[in-house]
Image 1 (tube, one colour):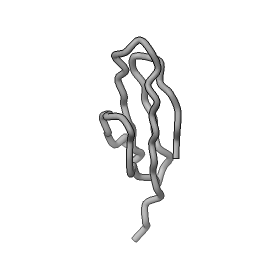
Image 2 (cartoon, helix red, strand yellow; image 1 turned 45 degrees about the vertical axis):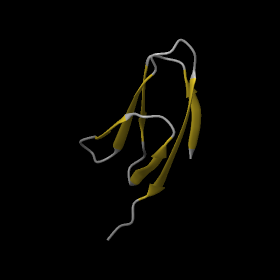
Image 3 (cartoon, one colour; image 1 turned 180 degrees about the horizontal axis):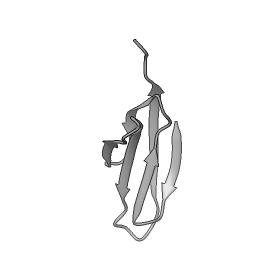
Image 4 (cartoon, helix red, strand yellow; image 1 turned 90 degrees about the vertical axis):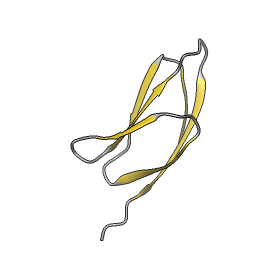
Length: 62
């Protein structure tokens, strides 16, 4: 779980290796980095902070 406010116009969060996104409280763009980690990009068009709650879980190895 990651709970934080974004005040900048552009923000990015990269999940640790082996983790997958389960939920984000605000819309964002999800992409996979070359090393397999998940990157989330958020845009804040407002002049104030936006609270963001991200949840993730470890991927199950098969």
